[in-house]
Length: 192
Image 1 (cartoon, rainbow, N blue to C red):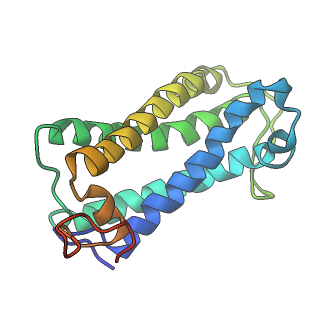
Image 2 (cartoon, one colour; image 1 turned 180 degrees about the vertical axis):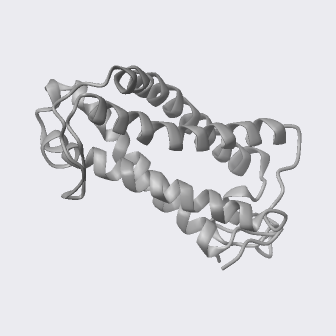
């Protein structure tokens, strides 16, 4: 359940993969630019964008608490790219906090209120709030930067796994570091 220096525990892995899936769902919002959002995704997924964003904000706050609690027990990044990996992870967390906040700022700034999974958290005011609208202008640029970070993060993990041969993906899949089959090669993710 907890992290160890050899692998990420089940809670860290659950946070990672659940949030990765939800972020992927959120990025489907980019399809709104196709055909002005008039397609299946626009009709069935995009209406949940604000609710999923609020859920992601809650999850990232819980995840940050878990990361702090596991500090010193987690696998350590090593090698020439360790500093870059730490920076990218930090920026991903910044994006995971900024994106929901700027999205909510847009809704509140335009006076729409805030409804999450059908529950009205903030009633519509009908009044625009300039500073919230101004803050919300960061949402789209941060989305594009966050998307670039995700592509870089995913690409680096794949390069490290398939070219460098390190165990990062195995540790995130729950396998201990150094998991190898009898021929000396890497075991497929998920075990033998």
